[in-house]
Image (cartoon, rainbow, N blue to C red; front, side):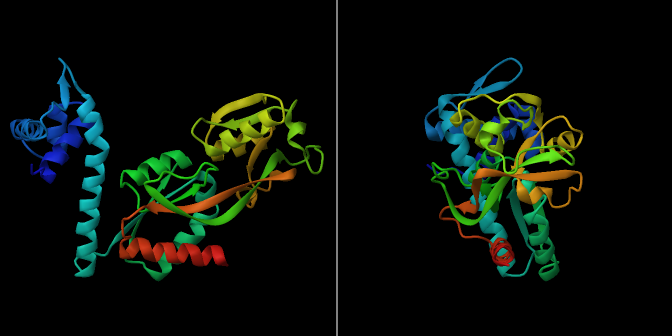
Amino acid sequence: MEMRLEQLRSFVAVAELRHFTQAAVAVGVAQPSLSKQIHSLEAELGAPLFTRLPSEVELTPAGETLLPLAQRILADAETAHREVRNLVGLTRGRVRLGATPSLCTSLAPRVLRRFHTAHPEIELRVAEGGSQELVNALSHGELDLALVVLPETGIDPALEAAPILDEDLVVATAVGTSLPQPMLVEDLRDRPLVMFRPGYTLRDDVLAACRQAGFEPTFAVEGGELDAVLGFVEAGLGLAVVPEMVLANRPGLWAVPLAPPLRRTIAVAQRRGVTLTHAASALRDVLLAEVGR
């Protein structure tokens, strides 16, 4: 069996778009050529990969199994091509960094400024998202590095993660609000909270802390991103539990500490067994140096 990259690119395009014609356009080949590649791949594997429907296609169990593997193979091929080109000087390089919203507004700007000053020729791409979203993107080869919240249960075994700092969580409130100093988690019981959308690790952390204290929190507003949540708190709609570092440039907000403290560990993660490109390795060095400061 000799699976070719062209076959896998065609397969992934059809799997993601659920349409042969659109996939052919995305890959840049004629539809008959794409269909031939898919049929050839199915013959080599000995199993159908798609169920053809009148207006779209669906993955079969064999297709569902192949998809993440094909995505990783293509990502590895792209990394290998880019790394060799870097070594022979045919490209300036690129690095793809993922970070949670709180780190995109605090640590990441300082790191990227230092990196860009030292390596202005390197192209920077940043993806902002929840930790689980970033872990998924990293696992599929869509990112080189990601700054994520390290869960107590450990990270995806396909990745390796190095803890770099601990974040203190505080209660954010509009300036002038009277609150206990410090606050207990129990003090949030009868106070409306502004809550992040599902997918934020911080949302899960806050809900777990409240439930451990024996109550379900009341939401004044639910479903926001970080900037929206802080804006709603500034408007006096409720309180929010956030990393202390995101309040540094928010004069309209106060940070009230929690007792006992709530902390979470931030880690820099990468794919296990995959050598970082020169650009990604340089960014990791700058990141660790900035944290060390």
